[in-house]
Image 1 (cartoon, one colour):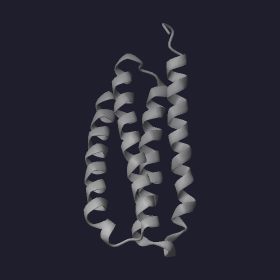
Image 2 (cartoon, rainbow, N blue to C red):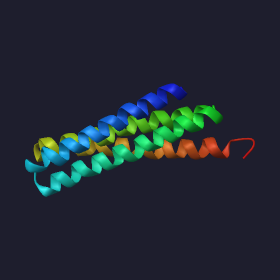
Image 3 (cartoon, rainbow, N blue to C red):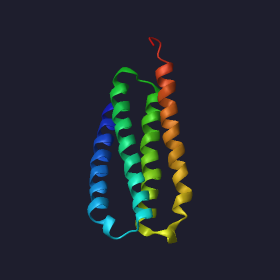
Image 4 (tube, rainbow, N blue to C red):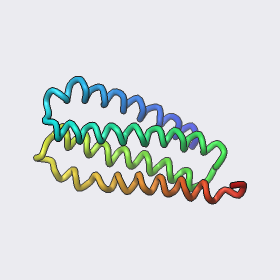
Length: 127
């Protein structure tokens, strides 16, 4: 799992940079400021949780627990649902507002990931 989370974080980080650059150099010229703000929010949370996933991968070496595993999985799911739904909403426009209804599921996944991380740390016997 440690290697899987590390690899996942590396791939998601690479994608975050590429998607951010695409937004900055290409998308920016074709969408209005409101949708650009949505795109930038998606990219910001994509980055935050990629770094969180890297932290989980590092912690997993010392804290091998189901809570750490859940934390990493929830961060991955959150990026996929939260960020991708916002990227698509920003690019496709208001005709696809239904994507905004999916976004909170990703947000809840992020919260679940952080909560699982708290539980993993608090449940350590040497803590």
